Image (cartoon, rainbow, N blue to C red; front, top):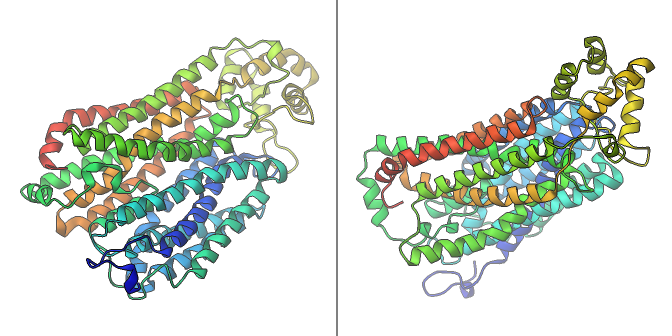
Length: 545
């Protein structure tokens, strides 16, 4: 850091070039990461390029992957602190990422598991340490640090927004494996930027000088793609009064308050991270647009970029008038918004499910037989032997011939035509003729306007912005000093558990879509009630927060 970059107070006059290098590094890494998430569950289910898995199987693997991804920064950050240093850890993580995305372009199942292993390891080394490197570019107390994290955070969401759009184009024209290869190339760019600017992104003496306080919170926030703590004006400034107030509270009360927060975090991530599984299935099957569900993964980052700074302004506006809600109150409002977004989707699903299906809709429609449809068919009198054949029928390469296969209109014919032809290969012509009408009616996939999904994402994103950044700041402020590391780790463990519980998506093909969304909304609403009941005790356990 040259002398002419410093003021008399030791602060930077402007952002160093290293910030923009790390911005590019993170943007391209997130491009690759979210490319994979946008494609993954649909790839596993694809009967041609993928493996013909059911949504339940794909959701299960997706949930396990997310669990390990969000737990891995604990280990990767520790290794960087003690052994590697931040830049070397990030470079190593980048190479694991490249290997993981490259392996996904190989059309074999062993490559999928090898790829996921590489991606989890890569995330552990890359994600927490590139965030820490941003903080290390600035002296303690720098007035530029908060703005630096906001700039860096925009890089995360630009990459996340572009990824599904590019993947949709590449997948539609060249297939899944070419799309995964493009994701791997994104990591090549990310690592190349980091290597080219290696002398600008990290102080060579940074190893062993772990940043404390503000920078640690910001690094943790961006490690889970949450906005840095400046999203709330409560987190600004250096007033020592909140610290003095919280120091008067017994440790057991402070830890108890944080355990409540962790419970909320678990439910939040379980509901929120349906975006890569069931919300992608909804977008793919039940949304009336001419693209696949891959593109839906761009909606959340779009709203994050759009809503973050207006929300910052709003909190500042309330703070100037002494009306900004406490952190627990904000979290309650955030959970209420999350609940409302899924109630909104449940209503959209009810509208679709109540549609009267007739033959005029078949020509342009798509069809899918799953466990829910099997139940409907049984209720309509389709014999068990016919249903058994439909459920067990395999094609030449051992994939499901009908069960969980989407039959949609394309250049090869209509969905109705292809579905009927597939049925004719496993049951007799007489049985097809007898049961064709009920099969088509019950397997027909209703579609609703994209507005429902886009608006639901706007609501849930606003809830995310009230929940996720507040929580990390809360841990750093409320945790007793001698247990702060343990409880910050507890935040990541709670996040990992919540992501594991996204496995509730295995019921997507069993329950009605409206019922599924309603259950998730009710789970979030239960946490709103818990917070409302505990709001006063939480405020007493966390004064000044």
